[in-house]
Image (tube, rainbow, N blue to C red; front, top):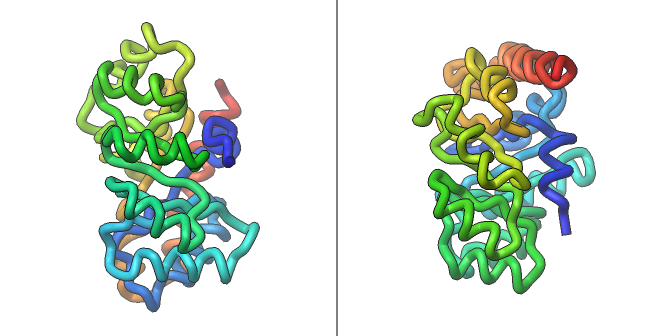
Length: 214
């Protein structure tokens, strides 16, 4: 089973594919990989999500890690794993999903916001979590949260963009996840992949600079 704590350390930027057109899936991921991001989530509430997971695994193999987000029911978890997802993410802490993934030894990054969410996730054996929506909380919130939960690691998702990405790392987040902010929307729509690659590389360089300075 994938160790997500270690994975977040090795891959501090998660690229989230949400509502990416099917015909742009491979180009989008290829550009992200060239820019330095090889850790992906495909949102299961996007059209053709399962097909996209299969496409990414078939095309890129070991070049990247592919997970499935918005895994809010055991049925969705099962479908995502069957499609090739290597890990799962949830926007919250549905107990049936926490239990299913624990019992089937599936790597899961549960979504948390409150101390209760963190405590529940830890009860099921999860110490790496995604704080969502991170951008709606003060940056100091993470350190306050980790006070009583000092054996936890967090990914920031929700409200993270090219301008503030480094701030989340400085605040103590182990990693960050970006969806539409990973690449300029207009450039994606136009197939301007060089502009997209430039932005991904800029984000990765900013994140790495912070990590190396800590």
